[in-house]
Image 1 (cartoon, rainbow, N blue to C red):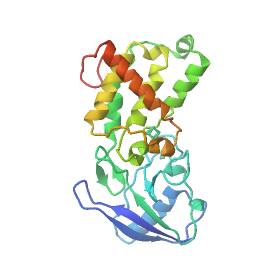
Image 2: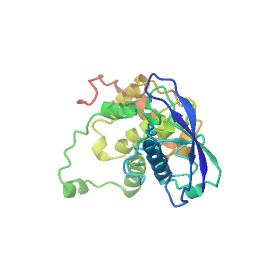
Image 3: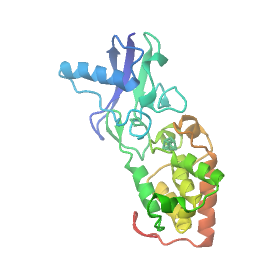
Image 4: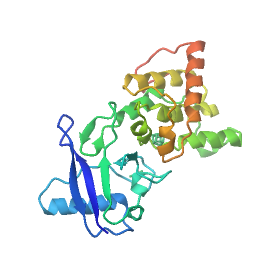
Amino acid sequence: MNVNLLVWRQAGPNATGRLVPYAARDVSTDMSFLEMLDVVNEDLIRKGEDPIAFDSDCREGICGTCGLVVNGIPHGPDRGATVCQLHMRRFKDNDTITIEPWRARAFPILKDLIVDRTALDRIVRAGGYTSINVGAAQDANAILIPKPMADEAMDYAACISCGACVAACKNASAALFTSAKISHLALLPQGQPERDARAVRMVEQMDAEGFGSCSNEGECEAVCPKGIRIEGIARMNREYFRASWIAKPERTDVGGGV
Ligand code: SF4
Ligand code: FES
């Protein structure tokens, strides 16, 4: 089939961007969305033009590197999937597809469809390390954890840090992401010693990065490829307020101790 693309092109962080039309011809319905972009890029390179810059790595929904807004939806129209898992069979012949980068003040555009998502890394780093030495696998397994708690912690640990939740939110809030990172350790015994300090430092880092506040829109949950639930945000707020009341932990340099 043939599809018409409208792709956001922006030469650099301070350049003016615009949507540029491209024609993708003889696209196989079995191609992934990113393979379709690869073919468009091969054609651009053959013509001596600048290929479209976009991020990807695993291309199987694991790493969280890919991130495109397809027809206004972060990761495209499939629920519970990243854009690298989207296939061209989802579209029809002669469709027009708009492709844009994540848009948020805390995610500056580096080039075309690539944004700088290191703000998410800094939130994780602000959480610091867990001080419990769990040793090798058998030692870790010796710490008994009730199955429902282990399952819930694992659900939050599934977050791949893609940033789609931020891109979907009208406030560009990173609350769903931060809540997943806070919750998965707050639920486990290994996460208890630094639990309060971690919650306060990660929430403060989230605010310092310029993400917006959560107003319970639910758009984040709708686009999350890993099914992180919005209840996590309520848990994060409880963790933060509880920790703030108990004793506000000293702010240490991010990535350091507790
Ligand atoms: S919460 Fe979901 S959408 Fe947000 S970064 Fe994690 S996996 Fe991506
Ligand atoms: S490229 Fe790894 S999740 Fe899409």
